[in-house]
Amino acid sequence: KEPLLPQQQQQSLSLSTEEIQILKQTNDSKLLTPLQRREIYNVLMTHPKLFAITTSRRSPRQIDEMDVLTATKEAFAESIEKLVLRWDLPRGEVYGVVDGKVAPKGFAY
Image (cartoon, rainbow, N blue to C red):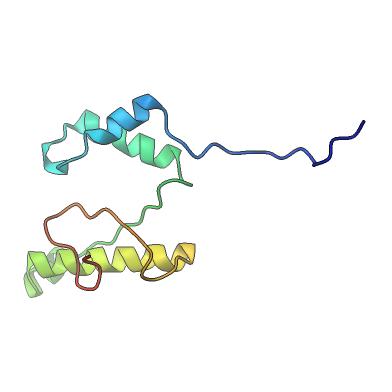
């Protein structure tokens, strides 16, 4: 007898208990050891369907021309915009984690 539905391949979109514990360490990146940073990086990179990651950089010259806070917020905003465009995410419904005290303008809620 044939199954009613064709066999489907399913992909797990969950984290192990160990991975959750590793991520719970992330409260202030400046307090992490190099080993903790590597563990967190490995968890994030192992689950590309759970964690979308982009980076944006500013050169020392750009930082000098504006100031470190403005350069940081500008890079955060650019990085978030890259995620929205790359993954075709609905604007206004996207959440992100910003490692800093101040979120970029237009992204604070």
